[in-house]
Figure 1 (cartoon, helix red, strand yellow):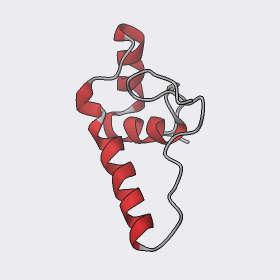
Figure 2 (figure 1 turned 135 degrees about the vertical axis):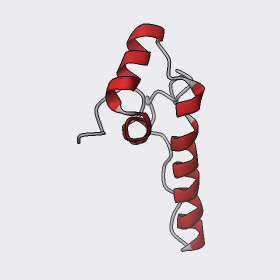
Figure 3 (figure 1 turned 120 degrees about the vertical axis):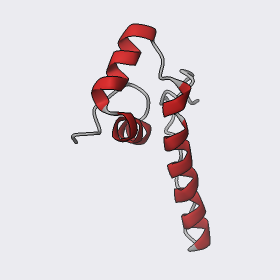
Figure 4 (figure 1 turned 180 degrees about the vertical axis):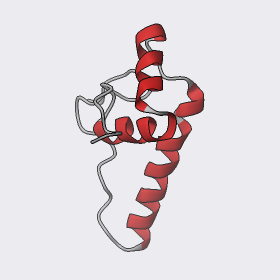
Length: 79
């Protein structure tokens, strides 16, 4: 999708970071510094936390947060 460009992090996190900061800005940070500034990392965490809270409140199965092999915001890979 428009904001779901593959930034190489995780599909959901990619989309949330790009939505929050703009995909061009994030690609520029990744190209120039190799990392996403901390100020853009909070939004995806808040959205995913709220999503998990809503799933718990409605008695749904916990949603997987990260897929194996996905890269987290700090650049590590999920086992």
